[in-house]
Length: 103
Picture 1: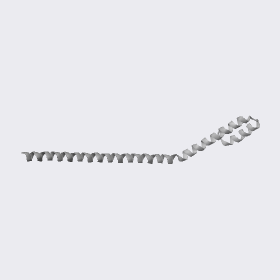
Picture 2: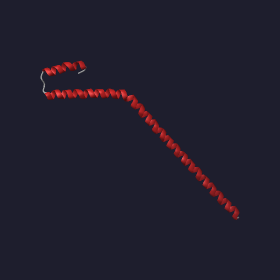
Picture 3: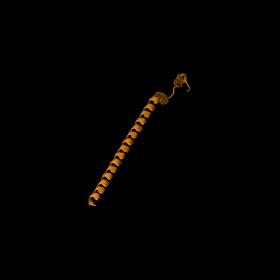
């Protein structure tokens, strides 16, 4: 079954031998399934570049969102560290000012 041109003589030969109905139905079913397989393969081949590009865009968007989240988290931790240093500086200066007045 290398070419479609071989199918027509094969079908004529099968009908000439008077095969059973079940055999013909089975052969037709197999041929239809093979045809659908070919069509699906062609559709997949044609659409593959578009789905690959979509996957790439989705991955890039996910990486960008992760980077943005990491940057926000870094800014938060930096702000918290600065706030902590300011509070420590205020507490140290209060302690020194209390000692100066006490002595």
